[in-house]
Image (cartoon, rainbow, N blue to C red; front, side, top):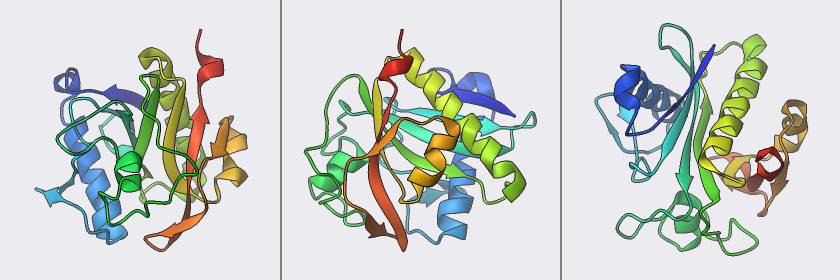
Length: 196
């Protein structure tokens, strides 16, 4: 199992990995979960897949994508859009409730958003825990390299059950709500203790 952090600047060094990650997102989010998302050529994407973002991808030696996570600076701006959680709070997205946070969405150079987090449904139940742990380790490594002290995101509301098992310093920053038929919650992951 390998972990790679992709950017617009380095994706040419990793062959089809970026396209394979977008294909894996398409397979899970559109084909399996039936989410209504933008797609083209069997790949899922949205307005937040920009040069400002990074994509952490867990894959095997053959480039088969097992898991992924998009990281976007909270300082990003592209037209009317910033980042998913803030745009939802600003009422720009009709699929995520505007009241998802207890406070105003942050805009800070050392706070990034974690979105499009997934583990492929093809990953066996026996292997899922290891893949989740590897994804978190690679995200933590990217956080250190990028100077990220905290990430915010939306996770399944059962995160308190599994997050401590993989050493995540995580807290809820919004109410539990239903999105796409799932109980979810906005969260913050603290990486400040890992920064040296």
